[in-house]
Image 1 (cartoon, rainbow, N blue to C red):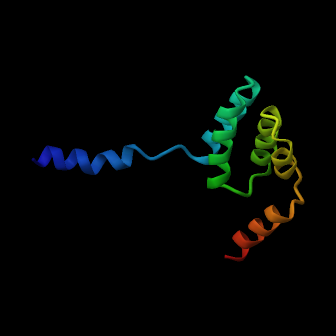
Image 2 (image 1 turned 135 degrees about the horizontal axis):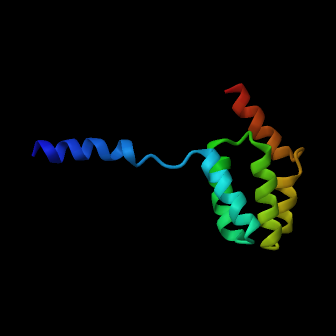
Length: 94
């Protein structure tokens, strides 16, 4: 019983997910391989973790362009997008 308890306590420590850098690198590699859906998923996760990294928005915009989501691509690639600016300001203020 003690061993089971130790395992149950240890598993959450081992199973922490990837950090933003790992998702970013994975997304960029998938983008280079033209796996746009995989790149979009990974880069979205990287942005959720670190929304202030402009490179991830740029790469995600390229993935959206590859998926022919041109409006989404423009939104991600344009650094002055009003919604993005508001989200960044909100994070700074909080």
